[in-house]
Image (cartoon, rainbow, N blue to C red):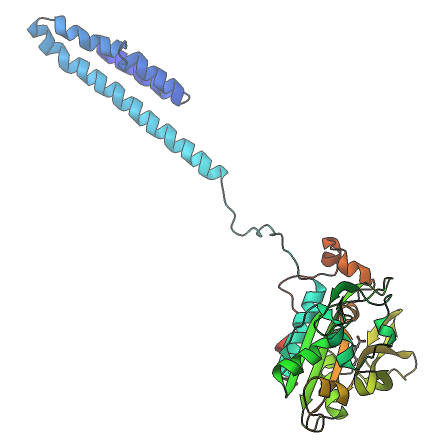
Length: 366
Ligand code: PHE
């Protein structure tokens, strides 16, 4: 074995033993760098006699190529091994469940309003709205509540210093009933609307908050009678509570803006101390719960709303949206509705993708 051959086998052995890319680079410099040993041999060719150069040049060049090839080959192997290791470490298991994304949730009041809109849309009702800052005339006078009516008392109602277009004070509407008047004045008859929204009363305890939600219903047409009111409420409540066995009890009552006026109760059964709607309230262990106010729209209201009461009749009802939500979803403290605590929402399982009622079960029934 000549010097070149032993140099080559020594270089090959060291290259094979190099542990990492840095060690390999050090060997490259040692052999093929500017000061490298193989580079040094190449330089000696210049000072040789032609004969000697002719004999040695191919051997030294072959040595250089062999070392360069060995280095490149080892480098390629190292890089491939590194890639293999990384691919093995970064295994992606597509069968693992995806991490849960954080979700917001719809507030029960918004959800119930959506459900109401869906149910009533199936019965041909449109959704109407009115201002929360209302004037005295629409909130009281046009609804047949005279100056002396107790609902107008300062301690019941939030008044503004401002005077409204008809001369009375501006106020936060105490119910959604002014939307009845506004709808008849703006659109005439016939009318078939619900009007959900916020209302305000100077009231605060576990079952009353100064702001709460109502939905008003109004139907004005020719020949409308109490039977239409009863059917509409029954159909709505069965669809909303998703129970066929909802039983209503109509009780004579008084509202200045309806005549006759009817308070509507629903039957419930006591189930482990909880009220479960359904069945007649007269059965043993059952009871009646007051749910909403309603009646045939008073002639005077129809008149003040610009329509002829001998031609147009109708019914109206008003119900607490928060109360509907409490009953449907078993929530028992009204104040929690307005605390904005997401833990409370989560506790009751509200999710934007969960819409328990809506048209699915209703369309078939109506
Ligand atoms: N506005 C009444 C209230 O707030 C409810 C009602 C509406 C009663 C429509 C009769 C007709 O108590």
